[in-house]
Image (cartoon, rainbow, N blue to C red):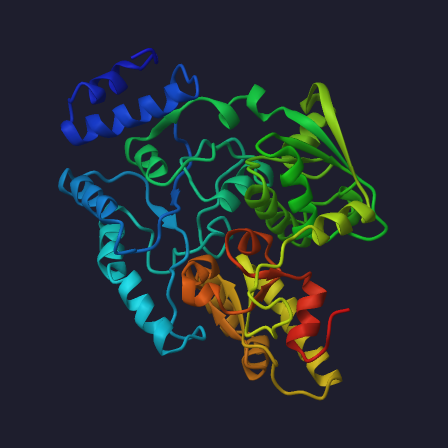
Length: 425
C-alpha cells in the first residue's frame, strides 16, 4: 500500500483484530488512495452519522455486511442516521401502503442491526443530526466520519468541523475503526475557496434558490460568499443557521458542495477572511435577475403540468423548532384571512423526532394540527422515490427534494399561498 499507516493501523490491516477489521481498514485505504491520501486522520468527534437509514428489500449485500460487522463484535462511535422512510400518518392510499410494505419489508430487521452497531437511539433518525435536540453536534475543528450531503455541508461550513462527502458504509467504517483518509476537506488547502460569490439582491434571497444557483455554478468546489451577512447583522443567529441549513442543502444537492464560507458569518470566514481565497478565484455575481433565471430553469416534469397539487412536503432537510413555529404562525394567519380552517392541499412538515417531541409540548402544535398539517419525521425523498408516489403531483419548497424526485419547487411564500387556498401568479 502506498499510504503511510501508523503501527497500530498497519497491525489492524495485517489482521491483528481479525479478518473483518482488516477488510474494513483495507477498504478505507483503497478509498483514500483513490483521492491521493497519504495517511489517515483520527476521527475526533464523539459521534458519527450514517446516511443509509432504509431497509430496502433489494439491499441484501448491506444487511449481510452489517451481520458480518456485528459478528466481529465491532462497535465504534455511537451514531445517528438519516430519517426513516415510513410513517403511517403521512398520506398514502392502499396501493402505496402495499408497495411500501414490499419495498421496506426489511426495515425493522435493519434497524435492529443499526442498534447493535451503536445507533444513538430510536429518535436518532434525522438528516439534521447536528441540532441541539438530537445531540450530535460536533465541535469546530473536529474530524468526522459522516455521510449525508446536507449534514456534511452544514458541519463543515456552519460548525467549522472537517468531513469529506463520504458515501454510505464508508462513513460507518471510519466510525468503527476511528480514522479516515486524510484528503480534501480535511486539509487546510482543501478548504480554500476557488470561487467568490457576490450576492447583490434587493431583498434577502430565498435560501433554496440561492443555494441552487451556487451549487449549479461551482459544483464540487468551495465558494466564498460575499454580501449575504448583511441580512443577518453579521451574527450567526438561530435565523442565520436555519437559513444556511437550507441554502447548504441546495448547494450540496443541486451541485456537490461540501463546504462554503460566508464572509463575516461562518467560523473560518470570520477568523481568516479573504485569506481563504485561492489565487485566481473565479467570480459569480448573483442578483435578483439571476435568481429568477435559475428558478425559471427548473423543469416541470409532472405528467400534467396544470394538475392541482395533491401533496406538499416542507422540510427537506428537516425543519428546526423555530421554523415549525414560524410556519405555524404564518399558516394559521393566512388561513384565517382566507376564512378557511384547514389546508386545501394535504401537507406534511418534517422534523427530527426530538424536535417534534419538543414542538408537541407547545401551544403551536395544536394550532398546526388543527389546520390538518401532518408533522412527521419521515424522509420525504424516500417516501417519493417510487413510481406510485412520484406520479402524484407534489409540491415542495425543498430544492433537494425537487432535484431527486418529480416534486415541483415553489418558494416558501408560494407554498404558503397554495396550501392555504390562495394562488401563485
